[in-house]
Image: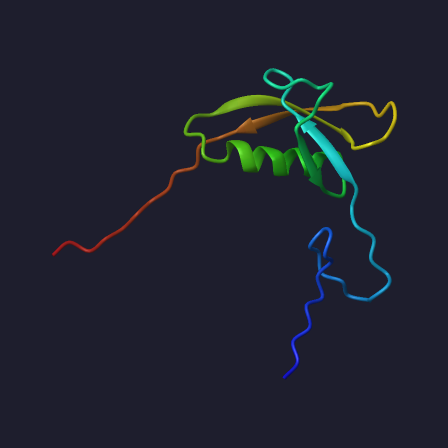
Length: 103
């Protein structure tokens, strides 16, 4: 059996039809309270700004134990005069349960 990896080497998405794939754009993502928007340190490849912000929030804040709201900005990477799109993200704690049998 021959196994062929049909993932793009740049973005990692599956390629269904060879030659018909276009990688999603790169987005600069910042938390303006703590990061300098003139020198963004986080670049994420997503279809749109909202997905980039959600991926950033999931990566950076998914282990927080208390609810909070965070302001996060996103703009297209390497686009001259790209405007920041500004989002408020709500982070909520989710109960997690563990079970073990008592002896």
